[in-house]
Length: 242
Image 1 (cartoon, helix red, strand yellow):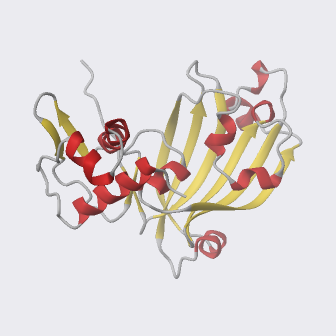
Image 2 (cartoon, rainbow, N blue to C red):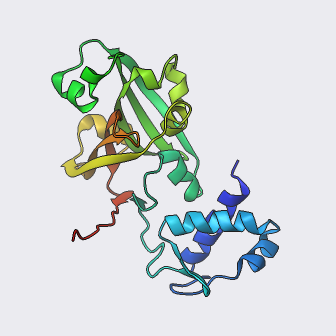
């Protein structure tokens, strides 16, 4: 069940898609929206904040909140638009229900040199690593195949069924997630991936390698995921170095 904030986010996004609110239009005030949705202004403020973080709205201090130019024109999911988010968080923002099919959760007996380097195993007392393989769905639509290598110290006593929920939610019980580095490339779909993601014929997909870190640069997990190119695009903001 969605929270009130999530419901309001979904409704405002839909109004932008159907052009009830158009690009550069100023939204009704927090007071007016609070009256319309029968909620507090704090709830409206939280919903607006999420949409600002997702680069859909922009606030002009002293003037109001406006729809960004071109917002919600892309029918694809724009990964990265709202910063570092979990699959489940992005699904909720789009009014979808995320669920997961766990295919594998097993220990890696002898991690390779590459895994040891990526996860900085030489610097850890607990050197155990687990492999987690999952299919992620929006409603009933398979979206992503994940292959995750994660340090045992962050998932102590977890079993296969625990990973049917958000991995970020599990990790947040024990550690703070800081940032991630991503490497993205386009590849042709393989027979294995097409089976899992219900892709017909030879189509390109995104292969995304991600290392997720704590705020003090300790690697938490290494993720190789495969995204449907008909459903996803990737968005980043680049800052010019001076």
